[in-house]
Length: 385
Image (cartoon, rainbow, N blue to C red; front, side, top):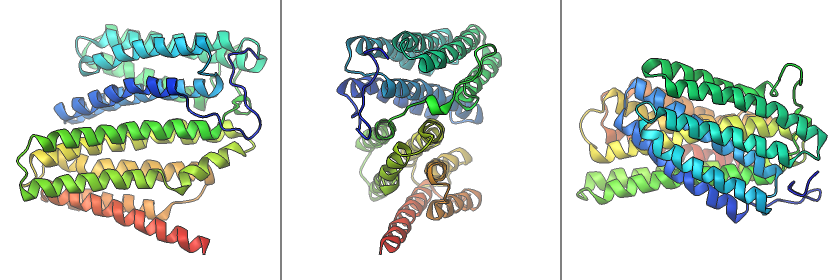
């Protein structure tokens, strides 16, 4: 292996470096952009467009996190690569509001340059490792095909762009699941994906904190501009409790135990692929949607909530619980019953809560989250006793 590869001793935790945290700052802006886009276009089509862009942002970030799990971000060339990705990421982030409008090609070119550039750099960096070299030859081939689709979508207009980008996104998400199979080059093996579980868990945890922080920023900014009536204060407290409880549920003992399980697994790459590549996007989507719901509830707490408002106020926390439950199942194969019941309770509220006010809905979703966290904490203590 070349000197760019991260060098670890068995059992050693590769801590997250400051340059990685610096890189993450671009995504604070990106998540805020997606939230504002969804808030401004709260329709089924707007939700689909926001979901596509959020998934694209997530994919750029998680792919980079896998790379810095393998490559040493303290090395000069790797740092320069991250700085270049930051520049392209900032262009991507600024184009998000008009990605389905006049800046579609800008967004597509920024996304493609990140995916292809990072893959080719890593292919060069791991040239001394035969297994990783073959792995990134396949990954680069998939990145180039994806880039062609993203740019083709950027050149198209209207629904054609939407369809092409859906296909491009499907390609991005199926690549790891299909082990980046390329005719003539074969497929990769997860056994070759030497992953440091604690590092990847910490990276995903930091991204979740970014999203929770974005939620606090939106809630605080909206609350500060309103008259502090008892109703508005109640909604603000409920929103804050929701954010705190989401942090509590995500950073439970399962989060720490999960990284340990992956580190000692026979095939850590396969578990990390499920747990840290696919499951967290549902969690992130839940946090983003919840932030939009909190802003709507603060602006219009009373009266009958419309279908869209009800969907985001309940659907956001519901997605969050579903994503965390799937993460737990993907690691240990066990059902997190408190979270599953919480998802069911959210679903029942979504079905039968029509006619309630935004205030009532946000308090209901907050209460379900708190009760889920309490139930899980009590159950965990009983198991230890």
